[in-house]
Image (cartoon, rainbow, N blue to C red; front, side, top):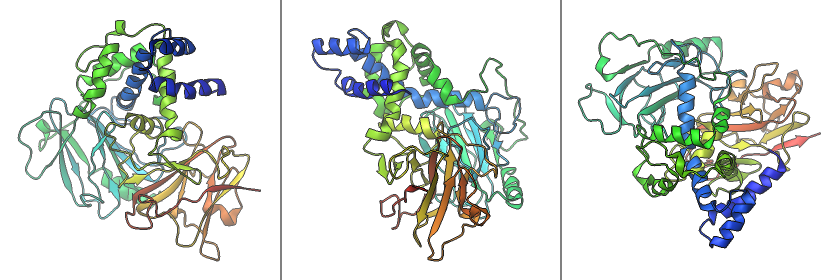
Length: 476
């Protein structure tokens, strides 16, 4: 993204926010954007783009992940469980910012016609969580060790407006939308022995529609759509969509994945540009002179939240928020989390500090070496686990000689004589004696993300700001 575009976009935020100014001023601002006198409609269209970004991204993710006849690798048909057998590697492109600490146990299913029943086995005190996301990326339920324990559980996920009888002993979880994404994570150390233990647990999971629950059930084969682009990252495919195609899909999706009651005031405004829940998109109400600019400016507004959103904290070069998983009417935050970390948990389950620049506000580069220094007793306070993950500038893993994409306590980190701990973030090995503490970096630009799963809610804690993240400092 070049400087000119960024300056124009950033400067335009105040113009879009002030779209109710005098007609002459609107005209001048409209000419500045090359959209004539349609500034108010342009502002509405970018608002609608931001509002719909999670639902459109969720649908495109669902299409790609379920576009197979039978479960294979990171994909499975609708209603079938994906059992990731090892951590994702540098070839993984299905979602941005994947983790390399847990084995995903996931599924997409549709509760629009009938409920689905999920059987979770006894996890034997292993840390795991099984968040359930609706079509708008809200985590509406999250069974797991923190919330419901690690014993065997039966969950019945019901759709909007469903009423009926459920199996005895099943806990009902109501989904606000037809689309449901089970995004389970099971902690694993990554050793062959622990992989095998987690594989046994994964194989005990069961998922079936209510009509088939308790009966012999063989999931039907999936339908493969040969026209889908299975190579390009989902976020890139969404960002390439023109405004008309984007809003057409959004309106179609809202028929079975309705906005919430709290969204009504925002949704009412969109009727002016042809967006009405339950109806097809009326493209005739979207002016042609600005339609091409909507996706570009809409996405730039989303990413600008790193700098301007009051709920994004910036400490020692790390940006993070405790407003994930449940967003209410904070549509910009919801879209930002979708763009950089689709599937994020509630803050009680995970916080994701992200760092794009070092302690001196300079972009990270593999041409330099960096150190994160934790004083004695100040390693990240998390009851589940913590890690620091390496991504390239697009939030994907980077191939490296030791196949290490994240670093955490499971690397048997070596402490310094005074009890402190240093993490070495660099392209080349820091030496055999320090490799246990090495997070390999690419030769070019990179981004760091810390994960604190089940962060402590008592001091020291990142949630109440009583624990501070140390910076990653460039060293000579």
